[in-house]
Image 1 (cartoon, one colour):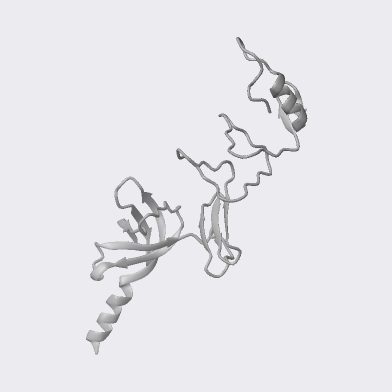
Image 2 (cartoon, rainbow, N blue to C red):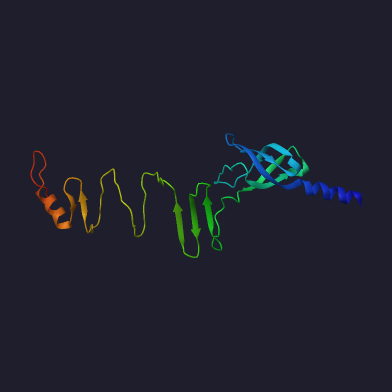
Length: 190
């Protein structure tokens, strides 16, 4: 019977809760220093991430620590979470990426909606960005380059830096009557 009890004791110590103390994010496999039961500290613990997803937990985040084969010198962090910042509640089947700053991406399957929230800026960096469907901008749109439109433009008002707000008739008149250096009015006209 003592053999079974010894095996149970070893098994019980193989998997336990932990608290993140330090993170080394410079290596190919992230290494953690973890506090485990009875104030024990484990260093150089590999933190496994799912393919394509990488996180850097904050000090104080909690997780599950396992000793592979019962070997205390080869522990791994299986899951690290941080209840202080977890987004809640989510819809059934919902998914969220979040940071302690309040920035997040939430997938809401019931609404067929993805929400992106950033405190300062969202950066999309690609040679082409395509939006399929209607695009609604509720703030100011600023363009640092030319706008090309393959279809008609519908606008209630356009603001010119030199002339102020213009309706479409005024825009048409300004365009049709302006003159290029060394040439005449635009051809074709609006």
